[in-house]
Length: 97
Image 1 (cartoon, one colour):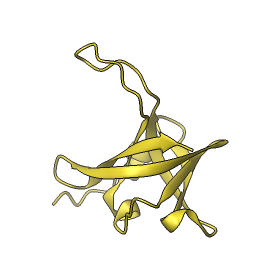
Image 2 (spheres, one colour; image 1 turned 60 degrees about the vertical axis):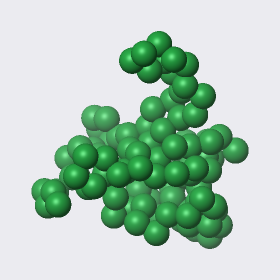
Image 3 (cartoon, rainbow, N blue to C red; image 1 turned 90 degrees about the horizontal axis):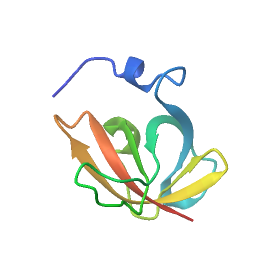
């Protein structure tokens, strides 16, 4: 598994945004940094309907489908997480609440 420090990739001065991850969608939540992508058109010209967020796998290790991610003023339910490449990051499929 990749053991490098991923902090540089999730720098809010460059690509990432601050978010609040709430296990079960309740409680105070935990501050995380993610790379957020709003819905758009993929490489095959197919329109996407749900936004995604790329985050450190360690931040989403206890994921359940009741978890939420708040980015700015919007709250999203995390539908699923998919490990990326070597498993150091996960892609979260989101649904706006």
